[in-house]
Picture 1 (cartoon, one colour):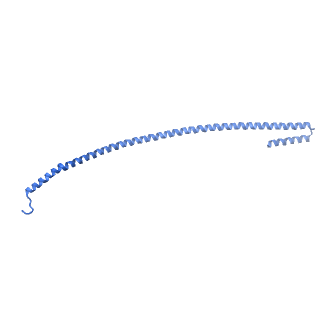
Picture 2 (cartoon, one colour):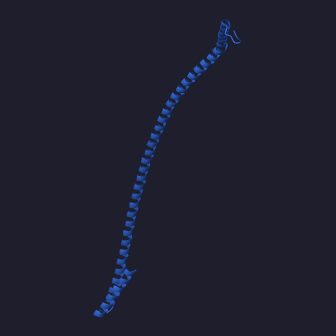
Picture 3 (cartoon, one colour):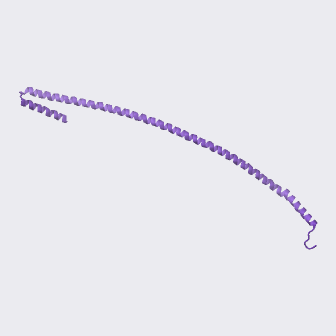
Length: 166
């Protein structure tokens, strides 16, 4: 046989060495690595389950939050509507009170104007009566003729016109 030869015993010993080496590696290297990989796989599964549970809880909390926000918005709308209604009622009440007060003021002003007009008319009547009385006295005191009566009447009318012009 030559330099390189194949011996069945050598092949058997090499195969035995490979098998022994494989068993030793399996016991001391692969087993711990398998345990570590299995532990990691379990941890990943547990973390995934926890993450799914947390996602479900977060979704439930989000739904609760959305419901609360909706309730708060509805309550806000209700309160705003109530405040607007009350403000409108108060506005109407104030406007009605102002209108009533304005009507009273106008009625009072009308009564005062009527009183002022009545006083003015009474004053005018008194002045006219004084003028008529003065003219009548002059007519009685003076000898009456048509020209004197005409002059007295014209004087009466001019004084009455002056009084109206004031």
